[in-house]
Image (cartoon, rainbow, N blue to C red; front, side, top):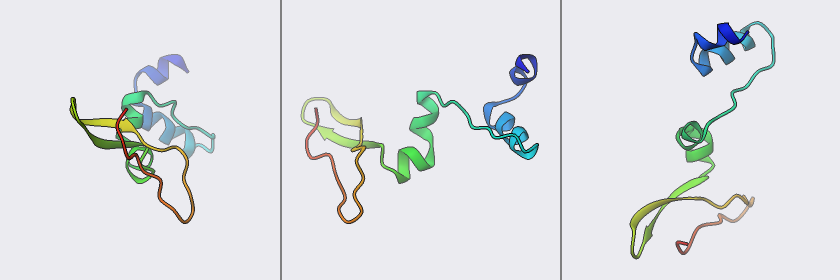
Length: 77
């Protein structure tokens, strides 16, 4: 398995395993998580904010999601 998985990108390995009926999911690295359209964008786990000294920075968003109220980052660290 190790030899086979070295020859393919992560997404292709997961795709092939799922096609074979084997439950699979990637173990994401931080660079994959920050680019993931669902986690990083739709779930707003990373948000851009203006810092008074550093300028525009990306921070982790609020992990708590409410049904009727959107939580937001009001101040930078």
